[in-house]
Length: 302
Image (tube, rainbow, N blue to C red; front, top):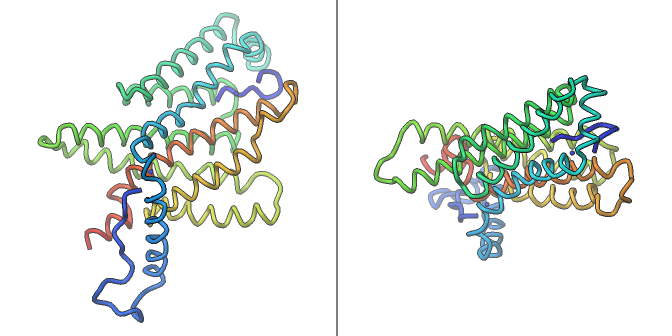
């Protein structure tokens, strides 16, 4: 979030096996059905392996989503003087206004993150954290930074998944009193959330130096991103993205290996926690599924 440039340092329920119905012979199977068969088998294996951690996926996802905000609040507190100096000297904030700007951000990030974790007033918490993303983009002059913009779209996608998850829980709690408006909101926010989640990977593809492993990772990741967006085997593809991003994060953003005063340490740390937040959003997608606006759900109907 509040990453200062230069001066101051920022789910697998078994899916129905859709491939080739019992009425169709093998010769009638389409390429899509073949892919669905293979991915369903992989999902069954992953479902078995992940059984012990399934009950904890929602909590883990929510915690990871807000970890970048908590880290950012801690960063501001521990680098208070540098943050003030940057806002005053480089962003031309009047004395006093820079203090208020930082304090509002700290309170909003800590309060919003805590409410998301404990599942209280999620609507207000998510709105506050989204506000922080927008305010910091303008306050730190990063609104036109493409990489920052794409990463924060993904973070917002994760926050939308939090909203969707909270509405799912409300619906279960009041199952006898279904609300069409709330159901509609949940569907639309699930769609928007999963679409925004993939923007981080788009930023990853277009940044950094090209190499064989990067090309392979980019191709596989982009295919998984398309599957997430259209909702085709979304849980499988989201799991694949979680694995890719987690490995990438540990190998590339390993800030703990850098010297305390290394010029790229804060950037690597910032990137590390932002990717953790997006992984959290993907875990909520793995846990709850892609929602009604998806190929997976439409296949269940037809």
